[in-house]
Image 1: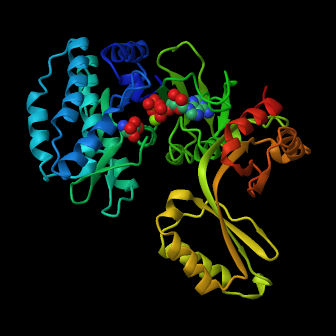
Image 2: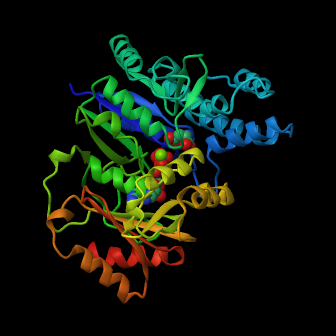
Image 3: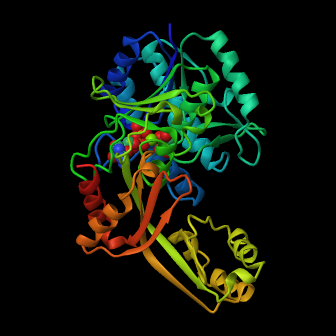
Length: 438
Ligand code: ADP
Ligand code: ASP
Ligand code: MG
């Protein structure tokens, strides 16, 4: 029998009705043995995710502002789930203890992690499966780095003892036995790590869309669904903004080539998207796989005549970014100029210092900053073999009167990134989609 790890996201577990649907899906296939659960997400668009409520509860408590109303919303949500699923679980003591812990006794990450802890406990009761706490399986060092060997050993031991189990997503434990969470959307990572640890044949990632779409459905009407996508294409698309799967989720799976299948909890009959290793997908030379993007970037344009003659120029420039903890997104260059593309909020938090340090250490002839930039990434493993794709892209944007501020092509030739004024972001995505996919 094959072995499947199934991760269910927040929207798939946001109500008792959704959880009962999830239980049906799990029970339909006996191979679904290790289930990773997120905290309850949004049932309707205007809802707030439990994780966000828990962060808010912590923040209120830490400022000595009453947090009971916010915590009550969380309690109400779980009570609806427990009643609707008809299970025997008393959560009063759990929340009484949490209220006490909120008085400065625990960390923000610990409080956030309780969302997945409780939801996984509930799902384990609904299914009649063992509950295994993620803090016994996923380990971090005290700098927050994931410890592979210790975690994979613990997961293998768990597999030998438990045929079926439910595991909370999003968190693990550090060497001081304190809860540590991944970044937002991190239950996808838990699913990947468990899949590798148990050597799964398939990692199913159940969400509220029928797989990866070739563009953001909030911008393009009914975008075409992607049936198959490679790890690398997926990473480019997720990093650029397509937020279905955490951008790091494929990293634990690359070496073993474990396939991920994105499926829709509410339309389980839909095929979904298969995410396969780079070698497993035949390149279709003319296809663009998808388009994604993000707003809120700034560009620092630095001009320096004969820049390349100053051998320490790049090092000094990078040091300014490093000491100010700025992540460099991209760095297009020409003979006498260089542009640093960074996140707007990172630059804004220390604007004067960064610009002054660049002036002092790098002595540019000119320096200017542009904000309100959006980056749009067009991804396709077949792009490198296809002449004329860029021309098509640029003429589509030109016809729509959208000015391209910069063009970046990675050495993998898997993508082309363009920078535009973010006021035209939605229009540009739509125009590119129509030119290539529709
Ligand atoms: P989960 O709660 O299951 O982890 P997420 O909210 O993290 O789900 O991810 C699914 C959401 O990603 C979808 O509801 C959709 O709005 C959004 N999304 C953004 N870009 C895309 C895309 N290219 N394809 C599909 N969904 C997308
Ligand atoms: N609940 C966490 C979040 O909202 C983790 C996840 O959903 O994957 O980010
Ligand atoms: Mg998610």
